[in-house]
Image 1: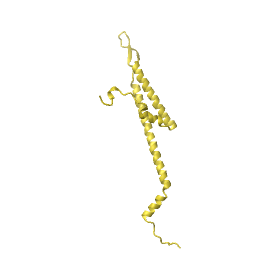
Image 2: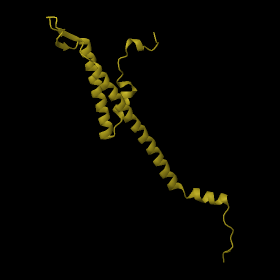
Image 3: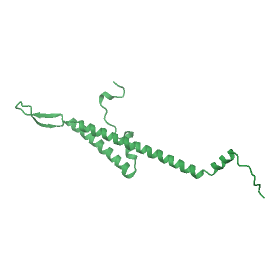
Image 4: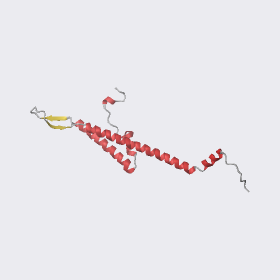
Length: 138
């Protein structure tokens, strides 16, 4: 007959028993943790994408026509305004970058494919640097 007044397990024994039976719980926690890290990373990437898209759209709105034609009668009336070739090229580049970024964001949000968005920020879409922002500061 088993002894009925058996001593309770020591704390070390109780901890060892709990750990031995915790395999499924540990697995679940690791899965949850890794999934949450990935979701946070992708969420930050999308937020970064929308911030970059806002910046590009602001840059595009700031590009104003640089060729203006005024009335020859001296009244100062603006007859026509348009973009120079250089300014049109700037607009085209910005519009192309906006399209590329929008497409990458759509791929991420609609198809859970972050490849295009990650490439965009890795340098697949480097903006032209103005001369005053050169690497060496000269």
